Image (cartoon, rainbow, N blue to C red; front, top):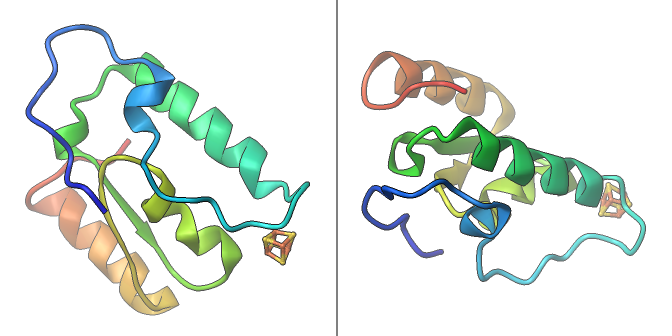
Length: 95
Ligand code: SF4
């Protein structure tokens, strides 16, 4: 996974949140729609992506951090919840 680049001064577009990772969900999986919507919303929010982190647990949808070009990692379910709270109170903001 490639780390986010330096802060952007122009408005974000959806493609700014697309990673170079091959998506490995089943054809027709609803996770595609969620990923697509999230990337569009992230772009519209204009929140600096170098301050964003995707934290996931287990399961197919937990590959989400690999497919979004922000900081992120996959963890265990409970550790993911704990970590996202830690991130929001220390180095990053929640969206
Ligand atoms: S949740 Fe996983 S197993 Fe189910 S359709 Fe999506 S990728 Fe396939």
